[in-house]
Length: 390
Image (cartoon, rainbow, N blue to C red):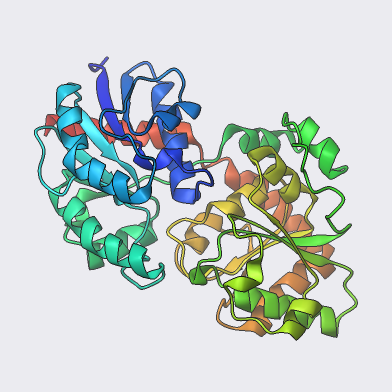
């Protein structure tokens, strides 16, 4: 058996209140690494990180303010020294947040995608990522990413050689895998949550949900293509007799129309319910009760929500671009995300053709079982040993 790896993790972003997909993935990876017998994990970050990892050692020295700006300074000015004192074998830097210079210990930088370089992020964040990620990648001993698509993007746009970039697919949290294996029956949102082992929160929006709905889960980043989705759904409502409404879940702000270009007629016709950011258990309930999951994103390094929907037995309509075909395989209905009519066509096909819907459900559940955090951790440890020994 190989010697135990002592892995330091830059957990600076783990303290956010409404974590996005990249942060959630990093948290799951750390849990999978911590569960192994051949690894020790040491976290570096704000004391609030203890919410996720009460039993892991956490060094919060100097991380006294829980803000993005201060955290960005801390991880470059203080973290490298603290990691040296912790006697780690290597540092894992999720979300591209690695040291700007070489360190006494090896560093693996985890880059999900290069969407900021393509201009998909907001102004200040885009400038920050463009300034810091290339330097972190150049200083790293290795880079990991989440899809073959992202690997090619990284090699094209960042200062790293192809043999230094390692693909480690994201996994699904165990409740999703359990649901996929068990094929739990669908009843109502509340009973689904209880069957899934989760407790609905007091503000769980059962009364707000339409009886039949199409679901979207994600942020309002322009690359998520929400405006075209709303227009496609409004078109369906005008041209068909489908009783469904559109339910949207994701990070704040809950008032979704403040940040997307949509006219009042489309907003009215799309019959939208926005539930904002929900808990993991509530999200599984939303997935399970939906008749279709629509995710026509323009750019994804991986795209976890379609896999989550598949695990809960919900047919998926998604884009035929970026990493989504790689991740979803033959288990989804694909559309051109730049054509509103094609998005509408895909959603209508799933809602009106029971054979298509059934095929998506069966293939989807089988597909999701390929994506586990244990497999991801296995792959990471293999890469880590190569880095440490090499």
